[in-house]
Image 1 (cartoon, one colour):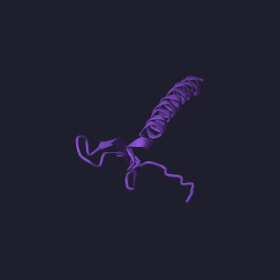
Image 2: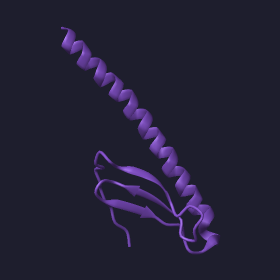
Image 3: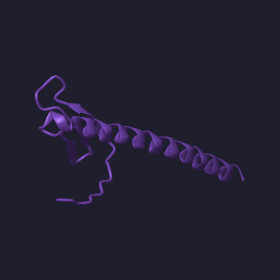
Length: 85
């Protein structure tokens, strides 16, 4: 079953691995107030594709962070320039 979802994280949102060292590890994003857990497939034979997905999530998050950082810096500069006029 496929679905699309959109969350806007609150100010206390955090992400990380849950169950480190347990039999049920997961990537969990606590979105303040909602949460999302991404669990590995039960079949270890499917783990290589899941690992690929996790790395794509990591890389995509890094790309977005770089993009937003650059644009936030530009917005701050524009606001500073407008305040100085």
